[in-house]
View 1 (cartoon, protein in one colour):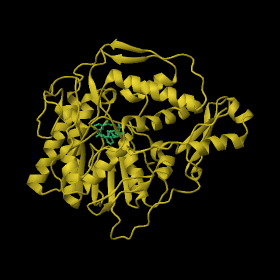
View 2: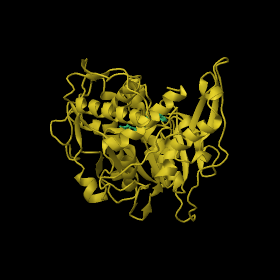
View 3: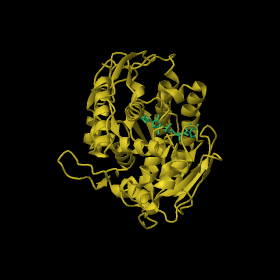
View 4: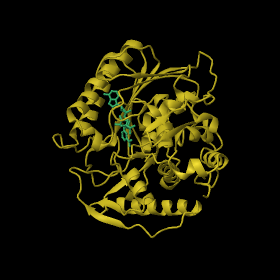
Length: 432
Ligand SMILES: NC(=O)c1ccc[n+]([C@@H]2O[C@H](COP(=O)([O-])OP(=O)(O)OC[C@H]3O[C@@H](n4cnc5c(N)ncnc54)[C@H](O)[C@@H]3O)[C@@H](O)[C@H]2O)c1
């Protein structure tokens, strides 16, 4: 079995990326990428006893493979063993936590992250923890998973609370990142009324908490507030074009009213607010079954299945990598910008082009790892379009550039390679 290659990502000038984050407005968000990668690429891995791997592959080889994938930082990863004959799994815990900055109490912040066990939340929590802050996660685990943060459980700076934001919650804190809300159409349409309650009552509760504790409040809003836009690209001053009664309305209108509430508390009660309008973001650990286009295409290509595209594939999207989003959220939180701020990558692709790009990246990774191609996967068009699927979406990020000095650093291709390697490892493990 050949070893997977270690990941080295070069920036647009050909320099290797070794840290992510930056110092802005007195808040330092820089962390080494190898430590971070060891958390999000393979914080926890499963070995299947039925496969040849455990019996035949010597332990040394397996550890070597894992070290390459985890960039040599195995101390921060736990290994579990799956026994198929009894369908049981033996979990292990970490022997050592990843090193976090030791901050003096005057700079250490108490940060609440709602929805912290989800895709965006878990990346944000990793970053805030490595930076040395005290982080409390509130999550009802509807779409999030405890395993995405299991590497922090027991750490003195970390707390995870099972709680639904629709119910009030009290805690002393300095900053609130309010992310709790299902984000993929499959999940938010599963129970539309609950999605609206989460958006409205959940946001009301968290704003009430911010008012009582004088914490700064940031809400993760969305490009969906622009609906199926009539202007292109979308600037924050555009009011949107949303169908208020369609199947996506529970989410789109939910976020719109959440923004209205946020500015209500700001004007009426002086709550210090930040509003991030997030555009399509990808990265791991996206739930592979939630129907989002990036994970769909990668998994199809890795399985050697044809890629299925909605409609003629001419609809466009812009995709940003998760690290750029986390940089944007942290910098916005610590800036003085109280107006809504688009956070997204403005490189626009048709979905058809995107499918081709993913096919290329998967083929290249397979080639580097010595996997012989069986044949080329095809791209199949004309899968029936979902209702109210926007045709065009691209952020105008000039406000973030001017006001936050933030702009995306990761091209789509750079992030895709990490994701492909992650899903490939999960498949090899048998957990996907
Ligand atoms: N991922 C994107 O591309 C994207 C784009 C625009 C906006 N956003 C916003 O970012 C936030 C996070 O999105 P994500 O992609 O991480 O989604 P996700 O579904 O992976 O995470 C959402 C998290 O919120 C939790 N949650 C849901 N309802 C809750 C409730 N009532 N109480 C407590 N916890 C609850 C879920 O269990 C999950 O952990 C959401 O507010 C979403 O609207 C994401």
